[in-house]
Image (tube, rainbow, N blue to C red):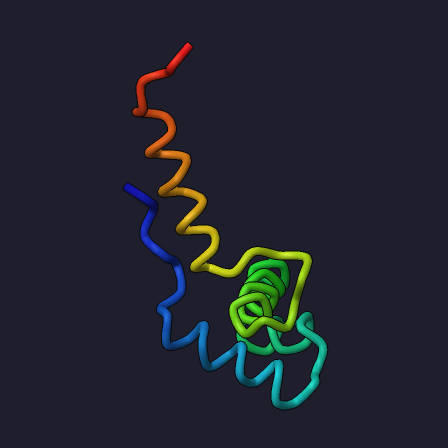
Length: 80
């Protein structure tokens, strides 16, 4: 079971919108709100990937699919 999230989803969404709408540096927004800058940077990158704006990261849906496929592959009997 994954660890509980430190920040609520509503806060994450609001902060991501602020960074994207204002163009302010992630570090400044994070400092103003008391959020670690690298956490916020990761949230913004994930949101960009989910929106199809980044080709260098998998979207959340793609990560979930990969996780499921790896799980299925781990329990599948080998054919060797």
